[in-house]
Length: 279
Image (tube, rainbow, N blue to C red; front, top):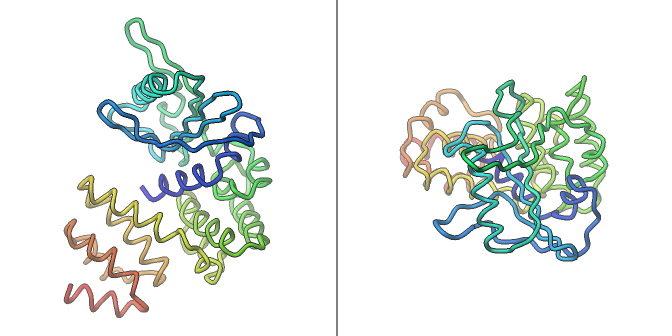
């Protein structure tokens, strides 16, 4: 969930970079579109319109290949709704983030009686990292790209983030690297490389993660909310004592929602322990 929110943030904040990376165009007149598609509302991950050519780029970010309804059907459903609303050319790209051998990540079409719909699939772990390293907006995705030396690749990404002069941008991208790199690397390694003061420069990270917590809570999935709350706590306090983590895993949906708000004011692990005792 947190991974999706980070990717959506990147795609909405830097739509031109995604157009250039995926379609090889350098657009100057992109409009970010609302991602809720009417009829019975469903929400796409990211939509942007290149106005000069009347072309939509639709992105879906997937951590796991399994979904309900199946991803291939969802892509057809998105296409039909987009075509009904905008009546223009639509480029659909599914970006799989986490390496897997599942056959589902090689599916790029939906077939049924009299219906055949195709879309593009990118398995990030097969991608050349150089185009991603060359564009600072895509640096967080570079952590998941192809490499014979993944740790060296992570060091390259962190070094390039450190060289960004604008503090808010540097902080936001460092926070995005922190989350996405967690799909591939041990969290301790990521946090050792990312300087804490850079992380603290991020003005959007808490908001991105908080939205993920809220979405998980709305869907009633306690285990998803636990994962995101634990990520927030680790960012704020460092490694969490296993005893405290066990207590957190036993919290209800309502308690997790309260903790997600309270932790923003925590300074030490003692604050967490006190909250768990009296919360």
